[in-house]
Image 1: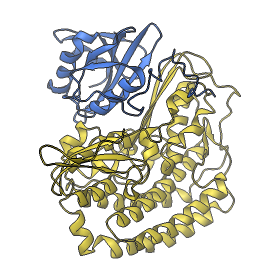
Image 2: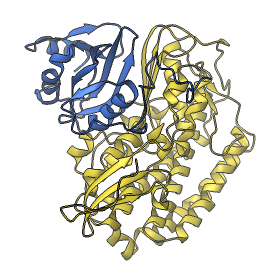
Image 3: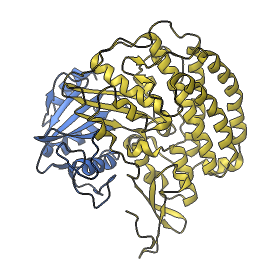
Image 4: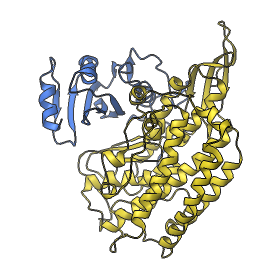
Length: 151
Length: 371
């Protein structure tokens, strides 16, 4: 499906997302509560079948966080991006690691570096930092007098 | 983070492999739960070489940040640089001159060859054959010499810049590459004679570390790891960049899904890379090697994603720009990270000796995983 067809198809869902324009791929924006159900539709609905989650990342916008999921279907060869807007004080959203297994590692990375909490994640621990590390290094307001990297 | 080793209440043995074990090819730390010799669980502990490259890049300009990416997957440094240069060019809408495009593809394929050579030597060493390592390094040396002449470096080249390449090819480049192709064509057959058909080697590889096509996609595996399971995922074919669309080459896949299938994919890929280099080496267009760009690059506000095929799989660069001279947020989707996440799934049920073979066929580069 091309960009427009994909958008029409997604709008026909029971709880359709909103869309961001001007990006390379169809970009859908959903809220944390609707993300899990939306993800299941994307993974299993005939014609969509996004089975390959190739990039997961968080972005700190100072006022809020965004989780960005890049998805491709290896069957239909279409690509889309899903963004989930999160509260800055308590960033939390459901895990999708049971839908796409690769998310388990990627979500641990986002938790480790941004402090985003994934509810229902089987093993939400620090991944790169040591267990006793304080703070979330990739946040914009992160300051560490000892280990800070300033270039 | 070092877990307490010993026997659990269920009679399972917990042991640490790494972070200083030779077969981990770097500082990867695996905590393995064993029942007898059978693997119950493999838990990777990362971060021993985490440098927070993504954070560093937030304070570097669009010309500077490319240099840091050579230090991620140091065996595919050209290709990492290439992915970053493509992303900046996409944002700035820079048209790269034809000569630079061909040079880039040539360098990419030479890098892929060098990387697969090192993998082949290390892989054989992991399963107990020491000699292939020296053979592989002898051939790799020839590529490193070619790189050194043109790029001035042997490992972290930093040769690709937004708009093209940093310098023109060395006058001897074509001659040396042709010599190398002639030389390596005979050597790659020797590789097959030496290792591929070996009975001991085959028995260590066949039927070990099975990964189904469905799992490979679900775990986000790319590159030879996924293609060994029959998943078509070569970025060079699916989303051609530079001149890959005009070249004659095949995407190598195998259906076995085991260690031997992944091994065969990489062996065939070396031959495909040789063929790509042969097609291009006499057809390097004349002209500029770099497009004219401004001294200070400013990406327009927006998001840009580019992907390239490294020796390990799909490498993605995701830049979010606020319109300034530095990226607001940059994310590197590294192939090794996703491939490693499938290790636990692949290793369960096999013997501890097989784990080293499975890790070998994943071709892990730890700085690429940790970033």
